[in-house]
Length: 434
Image (cartoon, one colour):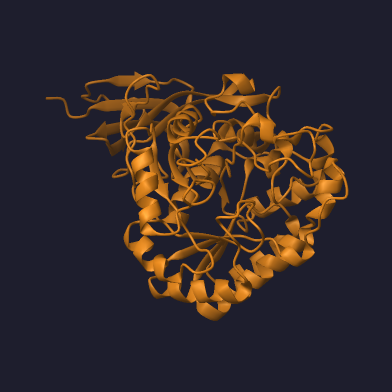
């Protein structure tokens, strides 16, 4: 018998210690050891990637799969194919846009049954916190959800209404009892307006950065009062960085993420009527984008995750006031971020920290997020210098709608391994529920 099932060698392996030549040895689906690149090893299969980078599989903790109920928007089969093609080996599914939303154990069972046998990557689930379901939070936690999502402003779907600040406080008190995690869509509804017209500037004006900041400040104060752990989702406005930094200095358990579209796109670039760019909170100015990168580099923002929120093209009508809001980018997050990060002087270890290690740590997903012994052998062969022209019709997303269509990104995923086995999108899925 051979000592290892698989060895993958690369001169650019991104480990927790940085980028270096290494040979990653796999046994029984786990990383058994990290050896020197040229070590003589006894393996059933030995693959040398040469100068291709070897990354841990990405962990995307913000994905709207939408199945069951809105499966024509996206589903577990198509979403997890897109994830694997983009180097993402773990997703955590959001509780809304599916019907029923994941706000009680029965709805979680319905979602798991819909997903069973369809997942090409490993999948976890968030629960939801909505008015009236306080009694469901602990049972959902005991069923294994990674935390609870709430909105402070309307979610866009009537079956997932927002919480008032007092309802957030009550939910946080319950969640603190079992040391759970609340993840928050933070926009203050009192500062949101109806767009005055169909254009992007009018839509952007209707959702000012001050709305995000005020909501973030409210959530931070509630975290201070309750001692609960809180995470701010999809920060788009640099106005939020100051209160988030202050919360960190005060030792509060408050963290925050941003998304590829906020770090790579800008309001000045949005084509007229192209509502593939519409999302809430919105894509803001180039100057704001630069400040978000500073917040990411400084650790105020810890994670970069997709907020993959797809829809059929007929909901993306060329009217920013009326079109569905959501960015589809699950397959494109790694090359999109690498394109901009490398231009700004960041390296692959930074990208791995933001898109793999930190999201895994945020949700508390064991054995994910790094090339380290004992972890699942979720691996990605990434060509960091290859051109990646984006054709929406060629993506695995169920609907060919993305603001990256026509762009040439930098970096191509060549191979993805899930627990030591190459992901073959034509073969039966091997993903598990986490």
